Image (cartoon, rainbow, N blue to C red; front, side):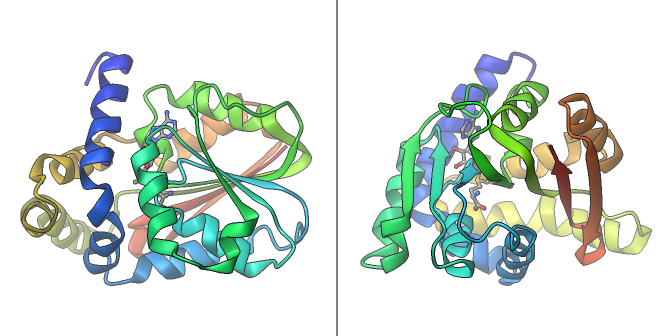
Length: 235
Ligand SMILES: C[S@@+](CC[C@H](N)C(=O)[O-])C[C@H]1O[C@@H](n2cnc3c(N)ncnc32)[C@H](O)[C@@H]1O
């Protein structure tokens, strides 16, 4: 999609449409490995157990809940521009006591409604790929972090090993949209998932954009055959 504003509208409406089924599909389609990825990402913030953190593109709050679980005094600001996703997450969490430390707020990752230098950590799980203006979003993440704070991005990438790549592409393009379409009623949303993964930056490109945003140290490492990559940026 060429026009960033068209992409924004499309992304927002697709997430609103699948919001009631998002969590279920996530665990089924990833064979629950997503829990391990989120656990590992969150652990990167263990040196900031009490400081406020921002979970951007928070969706149905899976990472926000893990952030609150790993540090019992931590406050989490959970921002997403699709309020239906946030609402679905709050509803699913029921009377989970961690919700008392999570503040869900509707807001745009390209203009984060948070003051400069105010959080110790920013996390974005499977959200950066959905931003219509990636560099602008990264600049904003850098702006709201305190000096010394960390940005953690968990994002899909493309496996490099040819056999794994072929199997993964078959799963992503042929199997996943059909299962997800039948369960969520919106096959197009999951075709978008496959095409957005195919069109996304290479890890070294995204790392370069993080440096461009002003992060002084940038590191990244592939997980699970390179199906996802964790990026760590320090301000
Ligand atoms: C794939 S979901 C990820 C949700 C959650 N972080 C997780 O780990 O499952 C991507 C989320 O990014 C949100 N999103 C996309 N573009 C956004 C933007 N510009 N500002 C805020 N949220 C955005 C979508 O509404 C959606 O909830």
